[in-house]
Length: 174
Figure 1 (cartoon, rainbow, N blue to C red):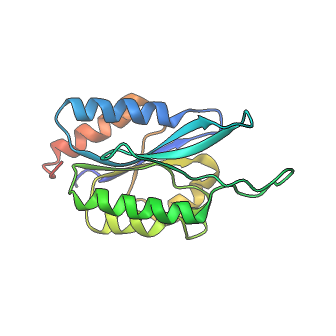
Figure 2: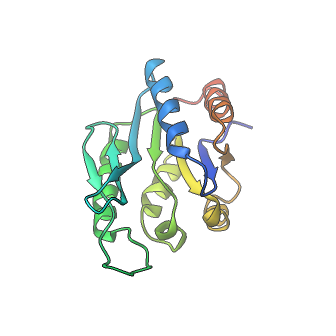
């Protein structure tokens, strides 16, 4: 049996998967790997709150993905229009045929069948090596999507590195 080409960094609210993911990407790039996709970054906004943007690993361009819902709003602040832009960015990244595709999150939109779910599905169907951050609160939806064909690595750098090494040892193109 070959190594899974799909890794999920499963994390809880108090954990920082993006730090682990960015360090892993840096090591993969330093080792000569071709890594493309989107990473999530927090930015300070003028209201002294945190907003989120996505950084394209190929172009270094950023895309703000949060919308202002107004005072007292409690709904999901992720802007669906921005996610449509992120989907286009992800498809451009995949077109470069990288060794590894990075997806910032499988979150609420994806758990409801939207967001980047189609792009993730296409990458998996095409056999791309892909790593995605999955909040613990959406793990059931992720499990339904991945169908057990993923490797869950948590926010442990050694487990992410072990997944990558196993994938390389499996003889798959990475």
